[in-house]
Image 1 (cartoon, rainbow, N blue to C red):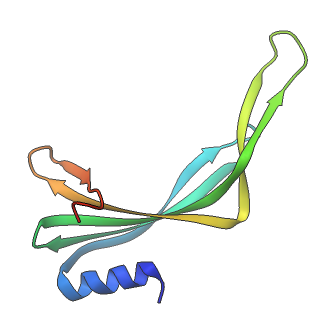
Image 2: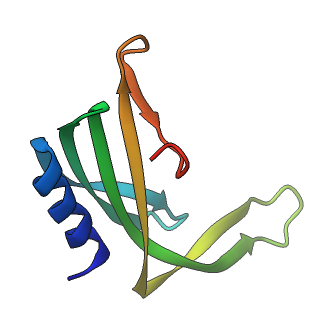
Image 3: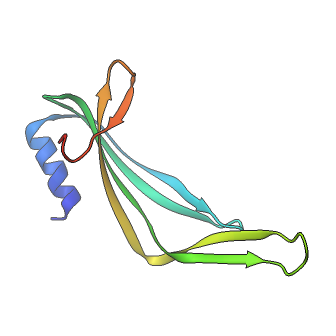
Length: 112
């Protein structure tokens, strides 16, 4: 069982899941037009602290930067990130619904 599955198990055990979805998003668009994609898994649930949301964001690991330039005066200089085709970075974020702002507010580790 990986970390995300353990998080979901704990949420299901202690709270009521309101919504769950997986969506794809654009991480970057390179100068050659290639679109780098990532995925975001979102679970919204009702907890004792109120409505909360957890996200698992998966995207390719950045290996470095590649500078593309021409030697002409006034030529265009482009900086592209170089992404790993097989290595991924996984981020977890937790949000709480703020009724006054009417929006999600990211929680820090100390608040959880």
